[in-house]
Length: 304
Ligand code: CDT
Image (cartoon, rainbow, N blue to C red):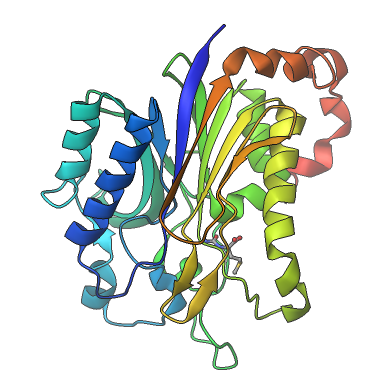
């Protein structure tokens, strides 16, 4: 059978003024721990290189752009690529991507990439479901300005043949939408890599604060089961600049069962041996799309 040893590398809080080099050193340390435990793939969270900056309203584009990467790897992120090559592991992480498109227009995305053990970028995903709002909202104790700082991803939901399997990525709020997982499932994804930054406090509905961990696992476990895919959900966790972020980093089997889970809200590595052939148990049976799906009845799903 096809087995892949996967590590989820949860990050604890990152301070607003923490230099990239310090964060990268933390990530390299986690990568070494993971490799020492036999990992072949190490998965880091959304916006792994900086604090979760959409919690602040900023107007000065120069200040905003300090949180963005204009090249990958850069001199600051190269140690990650070198460590991966050295250790022979693949890895993935999220970052704020600033790029210039073919028409000369500057674009900014909330992006994740997958890098092979040779240091080559194998796949890229740009976040599609951007939560939050556009302008400063006084009543909030902290902001969630992803709609201000990022554009909606323009790559769809790609699934790539890599590391002995079919891999897709999604980012944080994407996991709450069954359409995300179904788009990946329809392409026969066997592994979904997913980083998140989720505040415990949800200002529009604070009565739901105690449900944040439940909703996190509910979405990811349902997405895994309903599409028969492994899911690796990785948090940036802990109290970051006064804002509590949930942990709950976990590795989920295609049955929807959590097979490994972090116990802290800090930097922590968990590892699981994932048998990719187990996807068949679900994809060939209860969720055999070719046999049981009824797309003719789902027209509303693609209407605006
Ligand atoms: N990063 C991210 O997408 N976070 C959201 C927070 C809730 S919406 C303000 C999430 O869905 O977890």
